[in-house]
Image 1 (tube, rainbow, N blue to C red):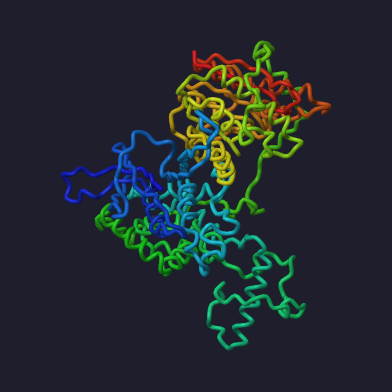
Image 2 (cartoon, rainbow, N blue to C red):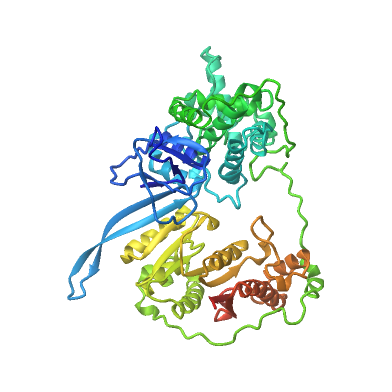
Length: 619
């Protein structure tokens, strides 16, 4: 297993040649690795090393851990830090010279990119060493292994841990003379003061009440109530007399505090956040901030008292000594400015979170369509695609008929794959690198890998379970031309020649198109979820200058109407036109960047309600 992080080596003329200059993410990842200690329950032959980059722009000096080797890679596949895992297996394959079977050695490359995905990969390799307390009974990844599982585009919590706190820390490291408490610290304080929101919170509160009662009976009320004092199921404590907590009790009255970042158990999120706050408190003075951020300081000191964090403290203390040289001291006369932020937790389901958003009503669609001038919509190509796939010769592991899908989806999925795969087969050349964005279980990418053995296929997906299912199928097929990359779509930085995406939801389709345009790569995409389009820090709508006169509210209304395309829906015909309008805007955007674009529909049209196909080739 290779731990890849962005660093910048100090020149050999320096007094300490083993020092690295790195961004905050590298220090965080080094702490994660130190915490999990790479212990596994089974022997492994994998290795861990740092891939350094001379162009790194970090500000923290870090002493290279003895267990890691420095290496410079030619390019990286995704945003660092990243964990690269190689696994080898043997598979039986037919001998081309006879009927006998030969053993084929398959080596699978799996890359997890981005802070959360990389940290989760390390934690999963070491899950067996974490026992409660204070960890969750199911390990460092928490309940059902869901800690930091959701991508930061959809999860408020992952975005806070992976992006906002790192950016806050980086900002302070770069600008030491700014003493205002930044956005990230205040968000953390607000979160820790809010009621606990965990799975079965009332059941947990009753258990804690029962444990406290047991301690009181033993005359040991001074002992803190924790999971360590858990008592096995006892039917007596479930009696009406013992149970004082009802399911209607407000969460704030349960008496449960945030002992750790995600609640009563220590999880990977605590390990990620700890290095950031260590650096922040070193710069801004822990004792001075305790009056302004009492809950955050309490959380920090609680972690600091835990045995495993002593090792992290030694490492971070060394980072601060090397970076700041103990010369930076904040005067007692300095006043801290506390920005005003929303008083809510970082739980996505928190009802106190501001969800004020102008609703889009499709009843206004006729008014919206009035802004679409003649000539804006691209004519749909009517040319029939000639299939080049003989499904009878495709093995089960690459074939929807192989039992990977429910029976009612098999035929439609086969038709969808045939449309996109045929388009790629007409374009691809030997040696091309093809990325299947938002690949899911790899239906399209694995089919392409089988049909195009001379091409390299990358399955890009942020869900671990989906890639795990795909890996089983790849190994069953003995494919040697597939690489797995687990990261957010916008974290992918590797080179490629063709980008494909089947039903990439909402803005994901536009992120794929932008990736392809950036790399001057051919694209074959079938969009989905037009109604979830929204402006982001990276995407503005309309996408093209040609559609710039269409008001944003009208554009979003058209997008919502584009989702009304189900068979026999009364608005089906209008929905198809709205899909055509949105995809015409996407096509115009690509054309303005030097592409020739063909817009058509999948065949047969009823294979999916979202049946538009965009094929773009760089002119």
